[in-house]
Each structure stands twice: as structure tokens, then as C-alpha cells.
Image (cartoon, rainbow, N blue to C red; front, top):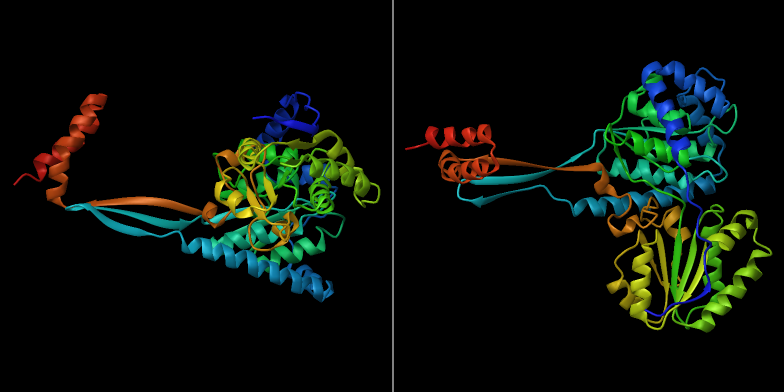
Length: 424
């Protein structure tokens, strides 16, 4: 494949994660050992939270409900309706069933929701209010019976009021002013009066992500996510200004957010390069978008649509937009992406804020082997088997011989005794 880079990203320096991993491991071990005492200490030191109470009271929720603008509440209700509606449609595709595979051999599948889930919503520079309805709303649509939610406090009054309202509206059963590693560990261990959870979800900084990685196994997780990414495939029919706008729309997340363009038109690529520089001059979030584009932005020119598809699949981006004259062809042939935005009418911001698909998506090429958060992540697909005596006797010799070949003689005996037990 011939590739021409009009702009190429700066290769990232190798990262030594030893300090991060050690810090998180020590925090998790300390919380597991000291529980509430450690959580309260970390909350004071890291969140500057001096209040003895962590759980948000019903009065605080009612106060926020009363004070927030009606327009915001209407907008959020719309987004929640879209997200949970789509999740329920996904749930309809997951079916329990029972089938007789052979005479007397009945095999079945059951779909069982995870019982208790912990949902984390990050604070930081951009409090991701929509993450509350993406995680809590989807969990509730799946049938999760109890959801614990945490978000870091912004000040002495607690978390961002819009986040609190979103968590409540989405159906969280308990909500806590608690951030970082201490929030993840508390939900897992049941600190501060929480119900211990079976699964944790949510994005966050490097410490939150590392805590999820280390806690995986004790509980389930949604996925491990790095800096957000966007890739756009565009041809000569695309509007360079619109392409540039969408690239910068994701670059504003942070200085480590990649923004990539693959195009079959060198002229389009050159025009986008100029447009990005022009738009950066007046972009309100230039301080994050500019270094992201400088260090992680790329524009690649290829010869054909099929080459654009192949290269995009190598990137396996989190968000993938297509603005071409052959959008249906790309939709049919692209394989590796977190979520796909087809045509200029669709944009990542719609997916991020509530068009209906989930915005918790795989990054760092994980889209090669997984999709993002969806209702099925909260569902356990379990199986069962029932046999008649005659069927058990019939297959016992087959299973016995396989056990014998493997040298698992105690297993073999369990089959042999059934052949004898059910002999006529």
C-alpha cells in the first residue's frame, strides 16, 4: 500500500509505568486492609473532601433537581430515552433458549443480569455528565438490580450538580462524593456503607484506569480505555472545514488525544491541514487541542477506497467518521472501530452526548477484538444441560474414552458409573 503523510504524529516516548502501578497497588492494598479509615484519608488528601458524609442525601438530590435549568433536564431526559431505548433494543437480540441437541440431551442458555454494578463518572477539566446515563442507564436497562455511583467532589458541596442529577435520573441506587482509586476500591470492597459490587465501569485518569486493571478478576470491568481517538476517512467530496472541525472536536479532550485523517484526495488533505491551523486560532479550547494536533495529528493520503479501509482497520480507532461519496461501501467493509459515524450529518459529539449509542468505547487498537460498552456487558450468558438416563448411558462411553486419553481417570470414573447405573 502506498501511503503519503501530509502530517505525521510524533512517536510517543516509551513510558515507565512502574511508579503508577506501584502507587495504585499500594493504595488498593491499604484500602483492602484499613477500609473506611484509608478511604477517608485518601479523600482528604486527594479530593480535599473534609465532610464526614460521603453518600449524597435525598435532600441534596432534591435541591439539585429544583435548581438546575429545565432546558438541561429536558435535554438529559431525551438523551437517557435514546440510550436506554437503544439498549433495550440490543437486549431484545439476546435470547435465552433450550434445545434438544440429540435424543434425551437438552442444552440451554440463560441470560442473567449482573446483580450489583459500580459506575464511576470522572470529574477533571471536563466533567463527563453524559457518562452517567451511558453507564447507569445501560446497566438498568440490562436489568441490574443495584447500581452504586461515584464521582469526585468539585468543592465542599460535592460533585458537579449536573452529574449528580444525571446519576439520579439514570436510576443510581446510591450516589457518593468520592473520586479516583479510592472510589473504585470502595465500590469493590463495600466501604463507607456501600454494597460491594460485582462489576465496575467508567472512564477516568491514569490512576483510575490502572485501578480497574488491577481490580479486574476480583470484579468484572467494562473495558480499559486510554486517551480518546478520532479517525476520519474523507474523499474529494468532503468539506475540508467540516473535517477539520470534527478533528479538533476530539482533540480538545486533552494534549494526548490522537486525531487522524485518511483521504484518497491529496487536495482535500492539504485543505484540511490549512483549515485546522486556521480554526485553531480562534478555538476556545486551543490550549489542549493544539498540542494534541501538533503531537498526535496525522493526515495520510492513499490511492483507493480499499486502501483507506485497510489502513483504517490497522488504526482500529475508537471513533470513526466517514465523509465520502461511497459511505455505504465503507459501512459494509470496515471491520475495526469502536463506533462508526456515517456521513457528514453524523458526528462524534452526537454519540458522546446521547444520540443513543454508548460512548464508552475501545481505544489503543482494542477495537480489533472488542466493541464498547453495551447492554450485553451487564449480562451473563450461562449454560445448562439436562439428560435422560438413556442419553446419559449412551454418551458415557464417548466421554469416558476422551477422559482416558487425557489421563483424567477420576473424570473417567464419573462417566463409567453412569453407564453402569443406567444400563437396562
